Image (cartoon, rainbow, N blue to C red):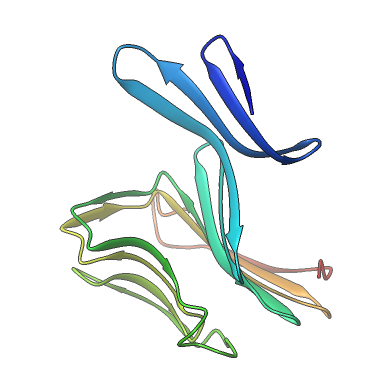
Length: 153
């Protein structure tokens, strides 16, 4: 851990920042970077984009959110690595009061929220053969695009 001026940086390994906080007195703390993993679940925050996902032996699923805000949620971020043993992305579902769910992956956001704002959404499914990414800007219209990228597992 290193504290310098208004910055607090925690590293998980040399050169790998796990958490970076900026203190803005009198009552604000900005999480500038976050990279957490427990079992098969991960949570990453980089420059206003939140990425939540699961890593398995032969696949990785994630949802990326730009400017994610959620008021009064019962659960803000949930990654179920027990109830969903072998994740297979089946559908994306957004329902008022129930949040956003990547069905079949165990990933859900904003469960029980009274209000949720997402300005950009990306969904990624990576395997040993390919990486498929679907991107939805959600700012002017709901049109997005998908792309097939090289494998990254």
